[in-house]
Length: 125
Image (tube, rainbow, N blue to C red; front, side):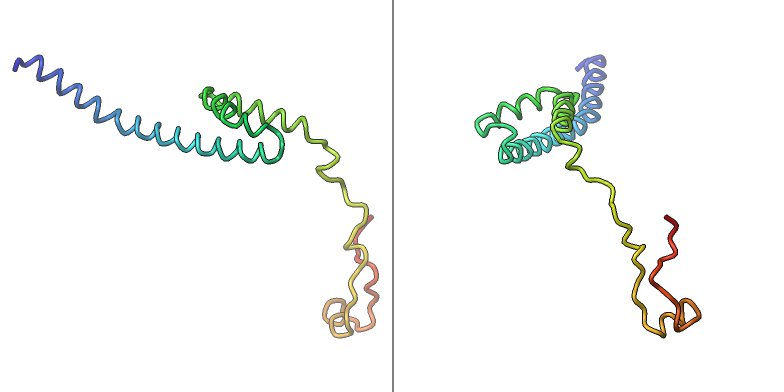
């Protein structure tokens, strides 16, 4: 075997040694992504957001875009579809303002007077 061929084979072996773990890791990540995409598509189908017969097409479309653009597009569409009123509103009543019923010992320990008035919480409106 010639010296050039030995050097080339050594370089190829070194290259494979370095790149094969990265390729294996990428394949594992891809498999995990596809499993997660199938799970998510099933949830979306059960919620009526996509048709049950379109689950595989949805997964294929999402998996085809390596940048994740399809996933983020879906998130934006779902966010636009949610009415903001259903996300909550400010409370109208201050629960702490009602004060707390304390017995005489608690009043004495906290306020220094067993007959202290605890109907006001001391919060500023």
